Image 1 (cartoon, helix red, strand yellow):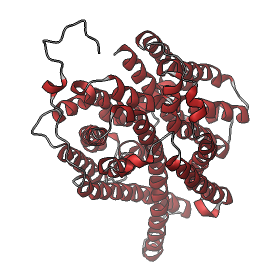
Image 2: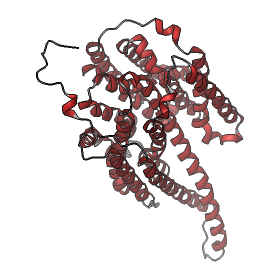
Image 3: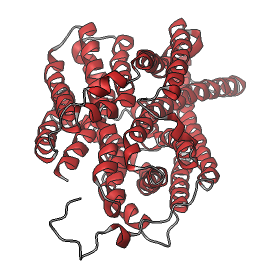
Image 4: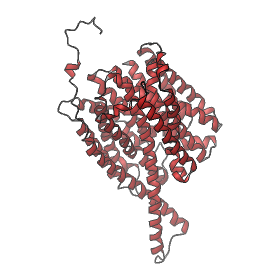
Length: 500
């Protein structure tokens, strides 16, 4: 249990490292004197490192031992965090941030693998609830942390240093709690290295395309076009080699099970929908109300803090015999949809207080959806298949987060241009009838603000509709009964000296 808590802290550290680094990019850029376009690659290379690491993390953990691999990655990530604030050369900073992304990207998959491996059925769902917090707690807590480092302490270096205390505690728990195991050198001869040679650049190129696509206008950029085409082609080769290899990193054949294939697909779309709780409020409050991250902190904390308890509450609910996890999943999606439709009432007069209803609905809906999804998917998995499931679902988790940010960013861009054109046409029609028409600069400022408000409201509506469309698909998942806790517990007559 101590080792599992250490792995959990490491996974949370990785999630915070990613999100806080992205939210604080403007401050980092200002301090180091980087241009907007150049600095945007700091987020891209970190995300690419994470995405690349996730399919292969569980295999290396099994091969090198979970204890050894986790400690190595913690040490690497922490060492890089300590030196990053002192690097002022952009090229070197990009390389180090990419390496830190790889080290961090290994930690979240290990949490699910450890929960499936170490926890017996009576408490396994609580372990999966901890994993769910990496998708519900960390992204929303990051808003407050970013504001505290940049505006509270007024020391931007803590954007990188923040992970050091958590890493030390996590390392001590992992080192003490997990058993020392030998390196399984025979596995190195069996691995799908040729597939990995294709998979690593494929995931990196796809990250570049998704993360930079909105900024570079997608297929109007030769870089995005080349990255997407080459990335998809290499990914197809990688997946083909994984399908036929006797010792793959991820076992694609498992996706033939309904709850895995359909459940993982739902997970990707769910991650897109979850952008409504963190990305959309920030997209409005930052540009229109000039809010700094510390001023937006309460928006994230409304969702984040309840997750400390609600994940386990949902787990306890799913252990009841009369509960159908599909209904809980669907109810969670319904609450998220209601939150989106509440946010869609957005006007230019809103400030953070008007987001309370939407964020409260998100706080209850997210754990209901995520924990139920994990229960429905992992219940059809055998214990020895845990590493394969962990690698697959976390690769899809990284992809879903990238896809969600790209979809929401593009949607806001497209709808903002549309509303700006409509408002400009309307202003031209009524302008001559006004006794004192506004100055052109004032008019464009008003149109820019209103078009952004309308586009964010449109994004809320689209994500709300997507959440509703997922509900019928959830009901197509196979019913999984609650685990029989009495059957899973050892009978009292078993001698205490028997360890199996």
